[in-house]
Length: 144
Image 1 (cartoon, rainbow, N blue to C red):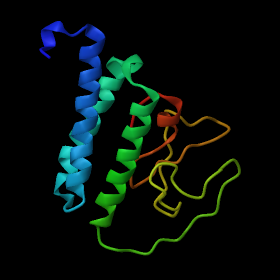
Image 2 (image 1 turned 60 degrees about the vertical axis):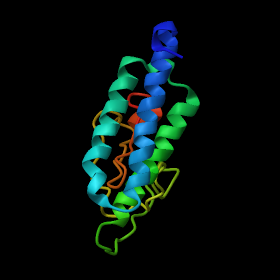
Image 3 (image 1 turned 30 degrees about the horizontal axis):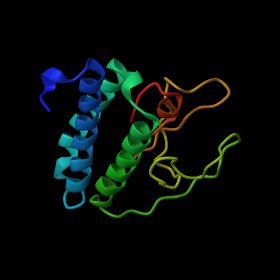
């Protein structure tokens, strides 16, 4: 079906689907090599820009799938790095999980950064060193 006959909403949905598909392709490529890291960063940046532009077109399933893909991407790129042992950190007051909510990386000494955007006085969100997850995604400020 030609794009000229599509409504504006359908065109936006196609843009969303294409951006998510681009991320999926990068995730598949990342299985064999870490050389796709720059391409992955571009795909993530484009998807977040699209989310900021037309947030209402993204369905809950689109958001969930994009975050699942981002988690797999982080895991796969981390698997290409040299193996190292890490010291696990104890759960803080208010933490529900002892691992990253998106990629399941155990909280260890690498979790040093706190997100200034989504952290509050009562609770400071840690940024995952593997997939860059924090509370911004859960709050809907950014997609992935």
